[in-house]
Image (cartoon, rainbow, N blue to C red; front, top):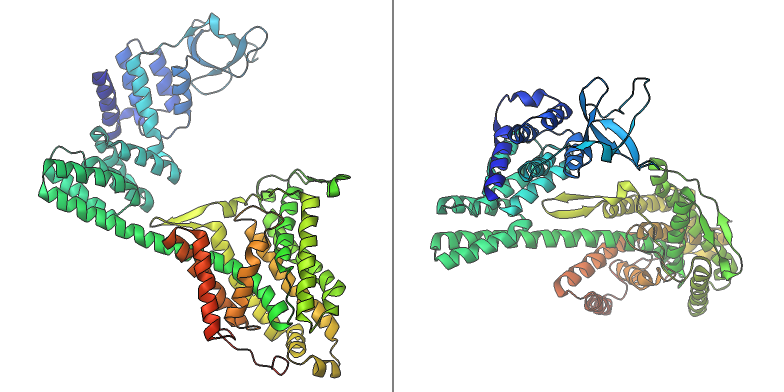
Length: 572
């Protein structure tokens, strides 16, 4: 059995390595037809292995059909033997559609009509165990020439981790023609991993030095196995080389973990920043302790969920369980559906802003300069809103699927950068810039600053302070809605979504300095990165949050006014 397998693989390698092989110019389907009609098994095997390295997608389909006895020989009326593939479901007479193997087109009769054949009436194309092994060897190598980078990487990794020495010629040949840097690195790693099983110490040493240079995380386990083998053989040279390689890989792992933690901290800090910017306006500038700010986050997240369903098949809501509201969907597909999130972003801001305006007009405007009453009132509003979410959307979390352009990731030197988190970080920067421009470069910003610094004087100068309060509260709530849209791309959406962030956001505003936008930015990223770093070090999210809270308390004991103190007559 092993002799046949090695022989089949040897034929594949010869077909791969031989320059100017005539079969390379022959279409794959023609080669398979010749193999089907060949007289001897050896000729069939030679023709099949000549397909190695070709990227024709018909190869795996036809070879799999051959192995599963779905290829047959049809005797045409003119005496020709035509290889056909029977496809699709059988009809009442057990007949199936027939496709010509030579071109993949339907088999036609003399009148030009498609022919349906019964498999039991035909002769199935035979195959031997040696031929099946040759087919498998060809299929296993197809992805090495795939136009898709990910497929090539997976194929190379499969060969490398198998550590089969007979695959080395194939990998060396592929490395000579590969142009993609990522695939080149994986090829070098695979060649080195196979080299760990080489019969000579020099080859093993060269493989260890190559793996030390690459320092890939995936090679760690096999290098440790090589270290144990060297220790068992009492080979000091290989032991030192293996230990050095393990240290290099572990050092690389530490760097990857550090940078990955910083990236996740930056993404969490960006979300805190967007939420805290709204809180910095409503709490820092207006002096209102809005305990319902977290529910504005949930409003934005649920708005994203509704928009996603409206772009899809629609949504059925059952408010209070009494009646059903059916929202029809657009049944969009492709990029039209994937663009739902671009529509959901402004709508999340608008929905949360409108809820914020309603809250300010209905409750907050009667409680200015009464912090305790505003705290209790908004806490009650938050409970009402949470229950309303449960009545409308249900108590269970709902899933918002990320669009295709936010679902993938970049891998840079083993550091995983999710597109959704990169988007959040970038968009948070735009939001900070937008808020700064609104507050410093627009008439609305001028009025907001005037009212917040001295409400009485602004009113005496003709400023409609009640209207400014309403717009300011709407702006702060809208920013929380944007944060909810971002959070929907990272986790599930539920009625208590905002409660997971409200405490952290209040801490962010207080640590940065009440009413100071710049301090809020620094504080958000500082708290986000510290939280992620402690979770990574302690491997305990709860303990990490406790330590962050203790650190903030100690910091506020030292600087009660936060990082930056905002001075104004009204605050003084």
